[in-house]
Length: 462
Image (cartoon, rainbow, N blue to C red; front, top):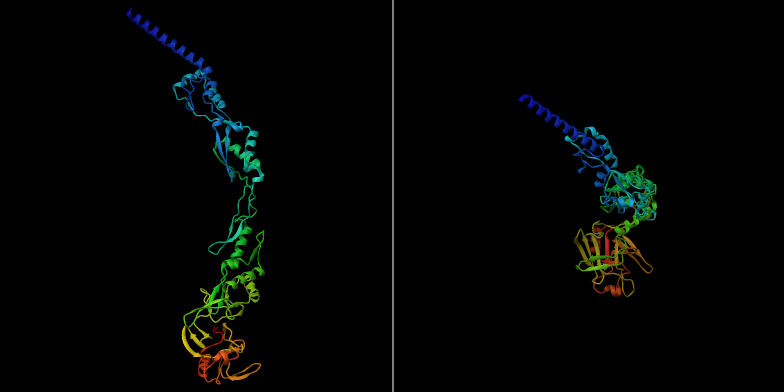
């Protein structure tokens, strides 16, 4: 009897539990027809027992919170989602999840119901165009055309191609609209429109084959080793001077210009030639004097050398040679420009003494008689050079004819020579009984000078 009673109680309890489960299941089915499974989470939001509209409202995002940095080459602009009619929607994904949740299987809520979904972005294409067109960078009046590469000589003396200003010219605006639109949909907050390839490219860049060939041709000229001999000194033509002889066309063709060769030589002459230039000279008495009458030194023959150098350049020929000169000096220091050096004759008219220095050492000095002042035959001051040596010689003028043994002219018909007809030298003789302009010397001193001096040696008269 007792066992029957217990069995009945157990039966009733089990039946009640089963009924409760059935009721809970039916309740879950009813609820899940309209709402998400209990415990459902979407992008971190609690969606259980909520319908699609409620969840969508809770996940709503304001388009004004979306902004994009749109970078052009010349400026950066802010693009706001509100201004382009941006809409942010999760509706499609929310509906998909709801459709996947079978109401009759709502008990799956006992397992994981965590969802991660993507939003759907849309914008108004016309508004996007209007906003982008409002940027100054999109105004044709503000656009700059790209510049072609320039051919330049760098600090190392090498010719290189340097790309010009890439400019800001945008010829196809559609590319910009499309690129920015895609970036907005991809939620890129920093948009560099240059990545779209919208900007016009220069016709010639440093990588253009024709530009590269131009650079090679220029380096064949600028890289030549051309050295001019001023006496024993080598004076090189620098790469910038050689490069300056080249004309480069707009299409990067190159030619050697003869006119430019001449211009380069004119500049070279001004820099290195010494003929007819003002000089400062430290005399025998260690006084610094100025010589403003110069008929001595180096003078380039620009016309003749233009032809020779032009030929060397078009043949790409490196040379070390003496250029064509009109005048030459006795020596040359390329660092200081000094062309007198340590070997020279010096005549002090006031003291009536001449000195001869050789390699920096005084070899001889003597009293002399220079041009007669009272007869207006004063020996002209200045710097000259020994033209030649002759022994013997006959000196002739309008009213004289003199035989001498040693003749060393340095200024036309004026020169050093012996004067055996004179009984004495120096003093004030030149004031009233001087020469016709020559420098009269005692016989033995003239003989000594003749044996030591040579053509080209500078003569300084002051």
